[in-house]
Length: 321
Image (cartoon, rainbow, N blue to C red; front, side):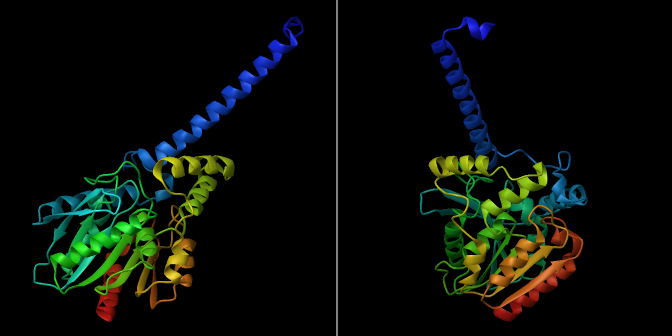
């Protein structure tokens, strides 16, 4: 009855308005998707866990926090680097108890910080006699930046961190270590112009590409892959953050790696699936090793079996230093 009482032009205007507001709402939803992925992701903690992080997550977080307290009490030197796009990134440098010519540059994961992912690993590295440079990615920790780089932007920043490590220990040898997003970053810098003092890369649970990781997580959480929504989110990423989801492929990067690589992955990783680590390992053409940690969830290899991880890292460094 209402439609019959309205003029055709009025019905057309209402239909156009409905479509307009529906499209606007969808576009806003996609922007919010971009915002909560790239700008301000939700905090994941022991009290607010992500179910994909595994059953050991709460204990893992507690251990990490305890080790962070220990590490922050050790003597360190603040380090700053300036990226090619003018951002100042900040980190901390720890010298081994005994003078060492080996420095490990540590790259943390998504929505974390240097201590959040490298307190336990960092203490292990120091115990093994290596210097440790904890790096904070852009838009993480105390570093500058408005947007998370997902490794696509951060891979170029690694060159600056390795230059800083070389200045801190002149004539030394550098190994790059990364976990999760940091693992992807470490892999994606493997084909760049690394200086000769970079002797190897240690990556732990890094993903193949941002797009494949986002699609995988969407399928796990929602039961399907909203490809159109992901395309719109990527549109905002390109326009605002300056990069896309498929710009850096870890498999392609390690296919052209100039240095040996150690791949570590938890067998029970449901956040960055173990098959991604295996794909990257298989694609690598440089001297390589793969270590799977039985029962370890995402980024929890050192928590699950620190001895096996430390043994693998020590053997790798000893072989290629």
